[in-house]
Image 1 (cartoon, rainbow, N blue to C red):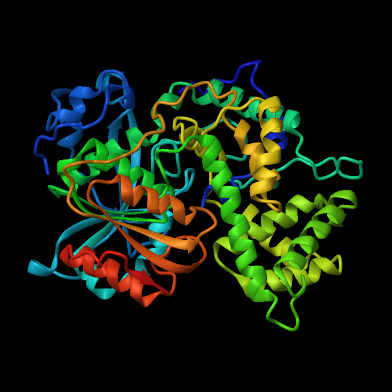
Image 2 (cartoon, helix red, strand yellow; image 1 turned 180 degrees about the vertical axis):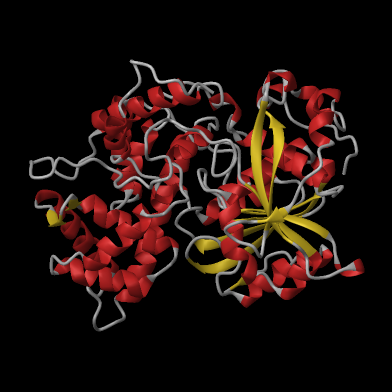
Length: 525
């Protein structure tokens, strides 16, 4: 990794400006027996076929034979932390090492009660798994906590693992806005595709200069191999895994690479690996439209609803608020500008949680040109020490389903379809079509159906009005997987596990503890 200063480096202040025009939005939110890979060579980085078909290739033995030194985590002494070495390039293990950081919470049970380790990935890309597990561990049921060590590994390129460092000074800061607006001008609120293109080009150039050697090796394929390394090092013959959001893509990729090493696998809020980046974003925009209109329908039944008493009226009200803020932005404090895009970002955040009461308060204030609640939400996002935008881009751009590469002209041509599918959010998500246009590394993982024949039953969980991973994706992945079984939550918000549904949590617990799947067609509320 090149860290020496050079005269042609892009100044940090310019990159901070570039990052400020982009947003992760809803793209948020991971046996040592031989296995025969059921995956075409086009889906595997050159030279890695042997690694997928042999128990442990000779060049990888030193990684699989390391001893982990678990110690209390300095920040979370109730958990243990460790680091391990992984090859930068699994196809060429002699090319150097990277460091992976991991955490675990030991199982409370012993003997027959203990099953093994449950590896957890909360999604992303760009979100560490370690802090995700720290936040979620206590919510797991006592039975699961007795049976499993809960384990998380920060994906390569993210968190405390060897990070993608683009020398931006904002590697862990959530960008401030999505669609660029030209406030105060006639075209206020319309996407500035050329401006987005220039911003992502600056980021891509900086990442190439500062992390160029790492960038080809932080994709989901490599992260899945890291999971197998961790599986072996914790002493499990099979990988027991709970992945949420983009973590489901990681789990499905593992199942495709190592079908005979899959144990009990839950994929909650699934990604569809078969669609391209265009349709990924189109579905995402539509997902937020569905979630907004669910909120609006509920709001319409309340006498104090701030956006009207029908979905249609709510849509018009939100459009009017966004337009008013784009044409006349508010500046409630130093270096604080509130535009229509700021409002849309707040709305999408509240829809993911879901936090409908807070969203009603926020919208009520904005109708009075008061942005107190919106600023609190924005400030909380900006102070988030977890999310890495460079990591988000680096992982996404190696995956064809996650990282589209459109020119400004192509993105502009797509805008009408995005707006038709999602009148309130389509323009915002159309700008992400350009995200990987200048990325220095092409995708290593094409869009394709993941069937993973030969795996034990895999439980896929989908929420009907999930904005960030639309329900149709969970349906699609469950159909694709040869052993997939779909569990449906009829509800709102992103993902289903530990979101208040006793039915969902009980079904997942039963599967993790006994391997029993819920009956076909099970729908929970």
